[in-house]
Length: 307
Image 1 (cartoon, rainbow, N blue to C red):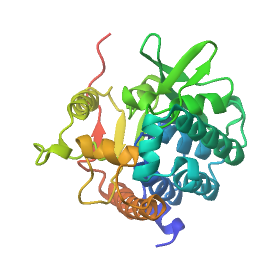
Image 2 (cartoon, rainbow, N blue to C red):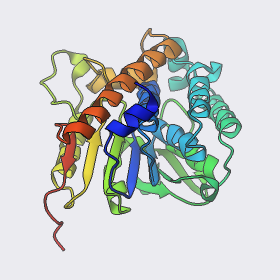
Image 3 (cartoon, rainbow, N blue to C red):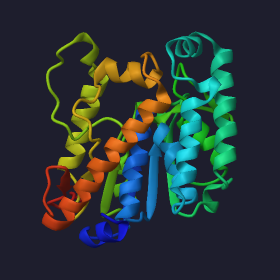
């Protein structure tokens, strides 16, 4: 099916439209496949919000929405750069060595500056925001103006992976630890249709952990909050949980292990598989949703919030 045919079969969403990109380390490769399917369907965002790894992918997309190749090049270099290698020895070195985390930050800065032309939020083609945790108050902070690169480094500063950043006398770390899928921010900004580009399938019905590696209290707590958010959407707001296309996605400690690189998979090759699977699944979802208009992956707000 050609891109034109796909666009004809997909009902265009009501605006404003938001793309929300989640955190997830190298598993965020899925978001490249989802972006490709959305582009083929000619679904364009009015705003892009990103958390953690999704912040960097989202900013690269917001910089040049019509050039997915540049987004791909940026993310592929992050997956394969020596200072950011996703192998057990490299992950261990970053975990125990502050200098290794500083080198990872310098490498990440170099890649971002090379692939993203905008230097401030205002220079981006699409409105973009990303989150981080302000360490002194342990509160979520949203970056939406000013210099872009320091904000992206703050959003991607996963503890034990990349050194924290300092901006205006404050220290920041990865915002994905408090809000990895910031749908609530998109709704507060006025989005009426939200496409969630996720690295792990939060639309999947959780099951009781079958192994130690699937256990994860923090993920369980987030799922509870996220599901409540989807149940309490304002009237008329649509949220689409785009599918990953994989039968089993990691959860709990297994997800943390893969995010940090403590596995044996080759990141570049694994990323390609993630992209292709997510592209195929998301393209199919968009066609079905356009023709039928009903899916378990679409949540629609049915009441107005209390005033």
